[in-house]
Amino acid sequence: MKYRSPLGIGELTKTSSIGRHEPEITLASFQNKSVCVVEYLQAYFKVIENFRGSSPYLLLSFVDQHIGITTSTLSRWVREVMSQCGIDMNRFRPHSTRSAA
Image (cartoon, rainbow, N blue to C red; front, side, top):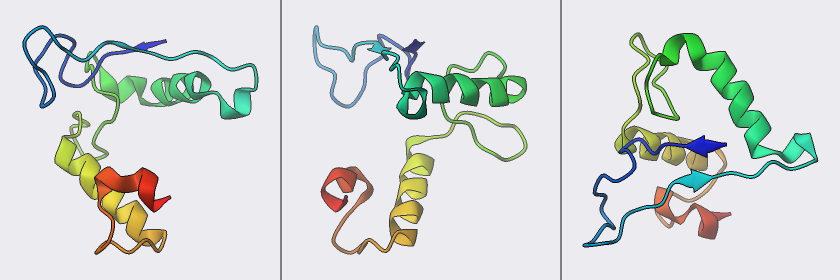
C-alpha cells in the first residue's frame, strides 16, 4: 500500500534540500491481521471514503467539511492524547512521543 504525504511527493518540506526530498512511503502487510497497519488503513479508508473525495490527506478533520488536517491540528491532538495518558507535558512535547513512551 502506498500513501501520498499531505504535502505531496516532490514538494519541499522542512528537511528538504537540493537533490534531497522525502521518499514515498510503502507499507508491507503482516500475516497477523491484528497488528497489520495495512489492514487498519484499508478499514479506515473504507469508513472515510464518502468524506474523503479526492483528498490526498491521510487524516481528515471531523468537522463539517472534512478537509485534511494541518500539522498544528495533529500536534494538538497528540498533546491532548499524551496529556490524557498522564504524561507530563512540561517535560515532553509531541515531537518526543518515543521518549515519553
